[in-house]
Image (cartoon, rainbow, N blue to C red):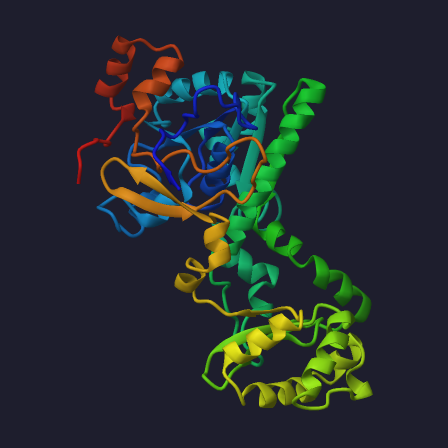
Length: 417
């Protein structure tokens, strides 16, 4: 599946879930950009407002060219870019013109910066009271850390996420992807859609606030209540689960890992007869999940001794035939070739006019009728500046005047690399 359409275009006559919704997006780096990309996939016209030098993550790896990073390309599809100097009153006035016509405004700066720039909710709701204002911060807009710089790894650290990730007895480990950023992205999309529905009912916009720290704490939904009840703290379990046994990786004789996952006692009851061909696991000490947690080390040690006698694929074939939940453990490059991932079209290909085809994750929200999914490559810096300004009512002379004054910028060219 290759997508070559411009970042805000749809097929002729196609109505997507968020068609007609205009989003002015001032977010940078990860959480905001990925969230607005997914909203763009669903049909919103996302206008990415960048400083004249661009989103800082355009320069984080230079994988395609200087100022053309793979990280940026991965999280900024399905949108248009305008490069604008907001420090100049003329640039600020252009932003206000965009906001007057916007349905959603997304910002991801610290609260003091937002107020200093004159783009706080109290100011903008007077400009456009129907607009949904979405604020993304690291730790929250108030409180002892609200004015500190924040990022994914700090949210993982503060929330306790790194404290439950890693090997038994080992040091703290960051989740392999920027999970705090991307959980924030998902909450952004969820919140924006709910706020737009609220506006349908009330006729008025509202402010939604999302922070990376809260998102990580929210991910402990099945841990916090258990800890509150038992006062037993959770610690890293490697690939295992503190509340389920056996629910973890095991190693075959070929040094390949696989997962055995008994989500509940029903699966354990089905597993015991299967294991009886090789060893007796009918010990009453293993009868319930609570029992198995209490005897985790002995049970999992015995299972590992058994599984080390045959290759991983041997056990996977046997377990699948018995209907026991199991899976190979893929490296990322293996996962991309998994038949189910391929069947799901979990990854799609976009076509960039300079650098050719590149792959991004598909939007995981699928509609039966609407063709949702990435709708065009990540835009070049200021690629759509003139187009956006024309739509906002500026004539060519006014646009040229802004360019001459250094208020707008575009570095994008369509030549083939």
